[in-house]
Image (tube, rainbow over all chains, first blue to last red; front, side):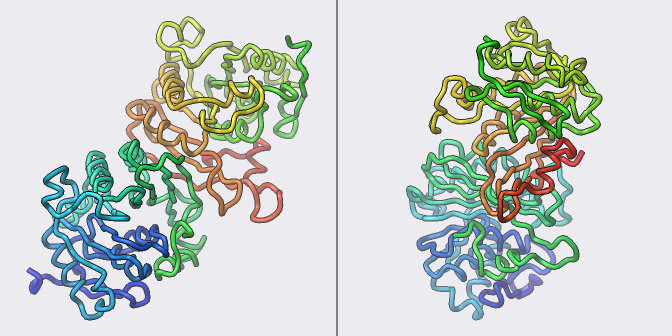
Length: 258
Length: 258
């Protein structure tokens, strides 16, 4: 379908990587993917899986900032996976292609089915995920691809985190970006599997409620949860991004300061 | 024992209420109690219970700021309840005494035992709680009274919130101040009972991890959780309190802006 699908080619991280994305339908990468990618320490070295990778924005942002990272995009939707494939094959991403691969698979699978789909146990050092985050009660997106990306219930958080725990090596890390109501189901799903959780609330404005949270945690750790200083995207007035948000969107800063 | 116990008489809210407190042992009221009290809207009117009231700091702060509030201090420790009694009887608090009472009871009781202890079902409009918050793994306080106030496991959060749900009238509110690791057990205990949860992280400095969280929620609500802007206690440099913290400590501002 790639030939027919209307798409755009968009530059990220000041042109250090590019995404082939659906023009109007499907899930277009944006701030969420870049903020999620920033949860990976700049010195990270090893294999990283991007669960629900879409066109590959978060995974390529990690590959662009972290020279020691080898990233695997994992995407279930054949349509979105096709955009991801075009992204990885695009000449503008040639410098990253050797450290990036694509797996078409459902990360919600369990046990032998997950292994058979290509997600081997204990094979990654980091998993990042930007799960479909709008609850069934929210206003639905107008088209089917968007709907598939945006509808997720608490049980799916549990399934995705269970898969992350399975594919991670001991002491591996997971990072997830979600809407604030997901805090409870995410922490419940992490209980007994992950520890040392760190939460960064993301606010559009300093005086308004958070629009997202990023939660990072470590497999098998028993360390206590920390609530970190928030990321505020915009200055108090006007539409300009804050200096910290600009640095994160440019791939020049890490969200947790590491 | 009151005659023998060394105590202090301390002014709060610019002298609008006073606390009789143990001089060295036991749990002395401070910033936590005042921040918790600030979670009650200034226009609140009705009956409020302060679970684990200690000498009464949080409850009297509510009574001083909210003229429509009738507060009941609930404290299990006979020693601390004696300080609470002296606080309520002190002439400096005469203006608040008509709207404040003391119940010596264990808020962790359930069912008929809780009713028998004086905590009637559906009898309050608001419950605030500052539970003993240091986990067993933390460094213990040096004396027994402090130890009793500071050691609490996840099961006790559940017990206290279950009691809060029982004594609240429909659509009543609960507010709790705790350390950030308590977020998971608190949200788990609220699940199915409380909704519309709002979290305010409390940071000593803007660039450091939070030292406390305040979580407010409404009985029987199905509304989603919100992550609110943090309260930052100190300016970037020096030991001065921020303007917002000063206003909260003075009883001149509410934590959630209502």
